[in-house]
Image (cartoon, rainbow, N blue to C red):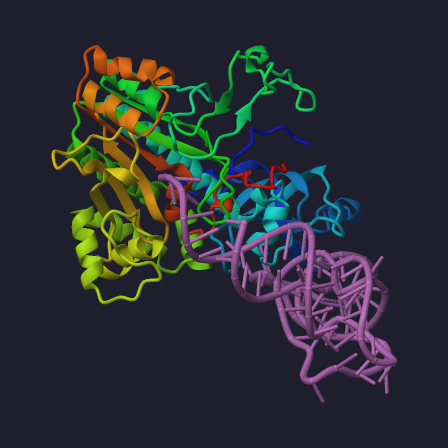
Length: 468
RNA sequence: UCCUCCUUAGCUCAGUUGGUUAGAGCAUCUGACUGUUAAUCAGAGGGUCGCUAGUUCAAGUCUAGCAGGGGGAGCCA
């Protein structure tokens, strides 16, 4: 077979259309379908570079039957041929094959993917093959684009990417149940005289866990580099059975010195709009597919979010609106308790019909590090609530006052000795600062219109499921 | 952890008040067709009805338990 430099299908069918008709090309990819008759076969070939398949036209008088039999749905082939304008309907270009090499066959009896649609539930059972579907190709390309856009957004604004640890020795974040990290023998761990597990003999000499947040370390970075962000995996051992939770997920946490809560909200809103705009500008072919197949209002919703200001209001105002709404809620509305999902949904989807940023929550329902207001009962927290997915961002201005911070830590019974390094920042050159956390998969849910978070990460980790 | 729904062919589903040999579409295999677009047409093969126990003359269908999955709640991002 003649050796030619491989062309990716996106170079032919993408917006740039870098290759013109008449060019001899080599294409490599996976067969989606083959159809035809005795004299001609049509192969729909996809290489993952773009959602569209390219049509390979095979003149059967030139190719032997043996080779053609090997080319089935799921097989991998390399094709040399000439790019021509297609005489058929349905595609502008096609490739007239001159040589074909079969890299890998796919037994038609046992290959699980068909050209017909599958349920997302079935595809989760074959997560090793689902990237070969249109849906997961689209989701994974968008996921990549959003990941790149996160770094571009912060880099363009002078933020530094700070790598916070995955293994942590403090369990004071209070963000949820943690996964223990240990090298001790689970069947026969060393014990202290009182019968407890003796972690002094463990790898780190003390109990350690997978991180639930990089925020506390992010603050250390912000109080030196001014503006930093983390973007890494985080872990929650909570047994959550919902389409919005994973045990392992990716989180983006910017942390900014000299930002107050309003600067923080401005950044969060600008950030989300930037990401959605980036998808609209760079992923339209994939978005159109998802819009057509899963969510007819997807693109409209994305445009709406980028074109309208988020509604900002106090927790207390939200309570008033909910009380006056006349709506029947399963859970009563009551100042001092956290808003339930149904309350958040009402605010976002019914009352304001746009993204909402809620601020100044009661201090009892928020974390210890949030800046206390002068009213002595609320803190400068902010939650960004999105339609369909609820809380997409949670953040706050941080308490920079040493005395107020340590008082709160003691009130909540958090062991101060574990937090000495965090408290030290308030002792030495403290500064007003703020930050927030964006759940990356929740962003991808919103941008793709997918309904289940297990379908926007390649290999989801949930309770009782760590396959692949 | 709680509530609720689902589990029948490789996939997506039908299956009536419990009644004889469990069906369809797609996929697969065989054949037909000179340009197809989820190609079409003809034929064939393919089932421990999630598992276990029970009720009954008789269970895919009713009951209980278990397993797996979906949705909702809680926890949160």
